[in-house]
Length: 198
Image (cartoon, rainbow, N blue to C red; front, side):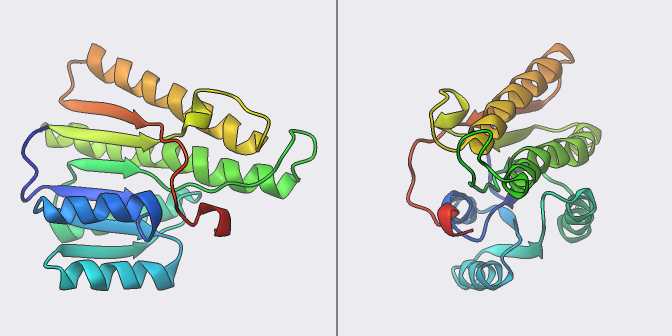
């Protein structure tokens, strides 16, 4: 995808960190941007600041671990802008430690956001993009921890490896069907964000 002006981007985890940076870039490219995040205070702040900067922006409080929230995000995106061309499944959290020491809550929370959040985004938005029959792109945020297993947070590493596998599967399937939807997986190293404070 080379032309971005006037196109629609949906970004989860958009109130801060990598998602906020992506949102700023999309606004600078002249895109219509839908910001999705569970953090209402920072979401409202990001929406206001990006609108002040001249962006066409819609903030939608979204818990990506809940399918109903992602379905509502899609409906509100279509109601506001009619289409979606770029989907950034970017929301992420980190918690836990060794596989047996991470709490059940750590496993469920990290899996819910990092993996189910991406699954929900793919399941909800891909059919909408296919129906548009136009050039689109899905970008899933994994991590360097999705490529190399370390001794840190097992829940985080497991989910980020799964996001890589999901992205590769999605890419190959869409390629086999000659779809206009392309797929990328983002695997950043350490980035200064507030993920540790989520």
